[in-house]
Length: 221
Image (cartoon, rainbow, N blue to C red; front, top):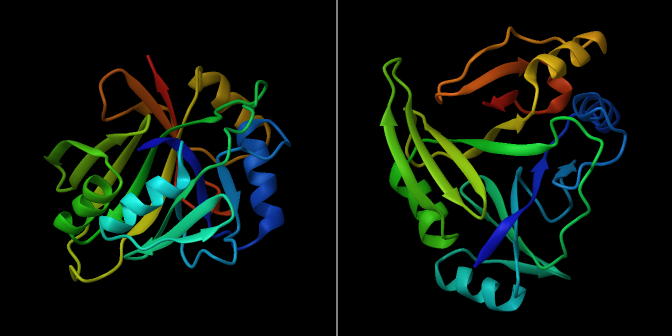
C-alpha cells in the first residue's frame, strides 16, 4: 500500500534557525524534499507522511484498520497516540543531487506501549516487525521495515497509556569523515566518530538544538 516515505513533519522552535541548521547539515540551501519544517495547521504533532499510488483507496484501507484520516487535497492525515500519520498522493519530489547526508537512513520513535505501536505500524500501515531486542545496556528496541524505510522504536518504561513521539533522525552519508570535517569547519558541534551498534556502520552525533530532534549521521561500510 505505502510505497515510500513522503516527508517527516518537525515542530521547530525557530523556523529561520532550523532552515539554517539543515542547510548546514546538507551543505545545500534548497529545501529538503522529505522535511517539513514547522507543523502545518492540520498537524497537531510531529510525524510522518507516506506516499501511496492511490490515495482514496489507501485512505479507506487505513480507516478500516482503525486510523481515521481527513483528506486535504492530495493528502489524507490523522493522529495516532501523539504522532501525526498520513498518506500522500503527490508525485515524488526531485532529489538534491549536490546535497551531503541527504538520505534518511532511519527514524526513531519513543513509545511506552509495545503492543500499541506494533498495531499502529504493522496493523495499520503495513510495516514488518523485523527485530525485538533487549539490549545489554537496558534499552528495549523494536525495528520495523516498510516502504524502503527502517523505523526504530525505543520502548520507554512509562505509563502505557501515554503518547508515542517522533524522537530522532539518522541521515546517511557516504563519507563520514568528510562530513565531519565539513560540518566542523562550518561551526557545528559534533560528537566523535564511533562505531555504530549495527555491524559495519560508523556514526556521529550532530549536536544542534535548531535541528529540533536528536540527529546522527551514519556511514554504511
